[in-house]
Image 1: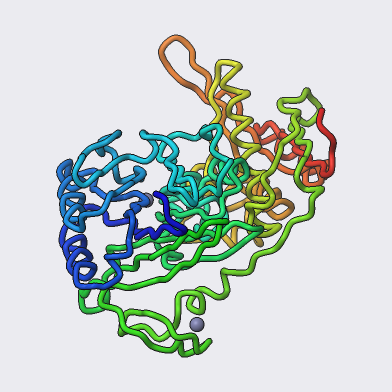
Image 2 (image 1 turned 60 degrees about the vertical axis):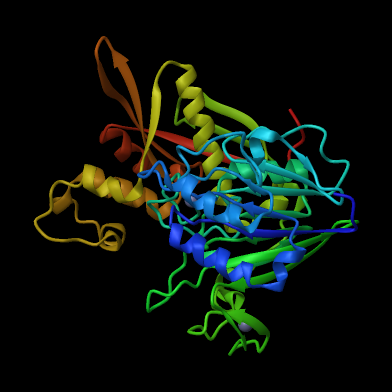
Length: 429
Ligand SMILES: [Zn+2]
Ligand SMILES: [Zn+2]
């Protein structure tokens, strides 16, 4: 593309709903906007894993707009094709065809691949993924998150951003933050989910974005809703395109979750050590943390926790065993000695009655009180033809495991305490 600007029509999260695609095509076909669109970008979850034809039916509808379509595969696109799947109009898996030169920018897509493409940084990069980066516009449900947190984003994508330093990152997946863009440390993040949003009366109110890229890296984003109308946000007063039943703009509706902080440079390299209390080291490494891609200090601590667990799993796997994390809500299920009554987690935490629920769970609760990021980890070993739990680790901060009585209790209950320390501001080792 030769011009001074390129316009992208961006959508995601259709989840195999052909009627939604039809409504979208109908609306765009009647809009003067379509003429100025150069390409359509679909940031994943086009199809439905239970209906293998759904991906094709949805794409068949979108093709009627007569524009080239580039997509990345999402978690719902298990049976989606890879490569170029139609020639006229062109429909292609952006990851499979590799970086695409748009003239004013390079478009790079990652669906399943985590390694960056080399040699694309001579022009402003526009990154497309299905998942958000960890902690950026990525609110999710615990069950949908890859590791049982309220973040649906993937830390591996933060590393891609830190590598490409894109001017713009387009993604979907986290529906509750769909239709919002923010700028953080020089990168504009646009969560374009979801097109299959449905209103109170079953009407389609999905959102899409018209994004214009200009030579020199300029980006402008216009948000639109299916069947939307222009109105003023009842809180900030900004004129905005919204479903008729909504009164707040997307940013105002999510204002309590949109506070971003810049992290200090000495958090970028940290030395992480994990060792058995009174025993040897299991992990001793310097982590490079992509701090410019993290929302705040809380996200930073969660990120280190995630990376530490990931590396620990790899270390234990290297020793021929497996390491599994027991989610916090499962800890009670496994370790509590069948209480007769319904006891909420907070009661275990603040007033654990060992005569009722057992010593084991109460020792764990005392540990959680000292370190809310403590984990129970099972080391699984194989012998001949069965798998057994060879060690029950509890991983917690050095400070939490300073308490000698607690450590003695944990040991007596059969746990192997693992202490971690995170040292900031270190040089490369
Ligand atoms: Zn998804
Ligand atoms: Zn507002």
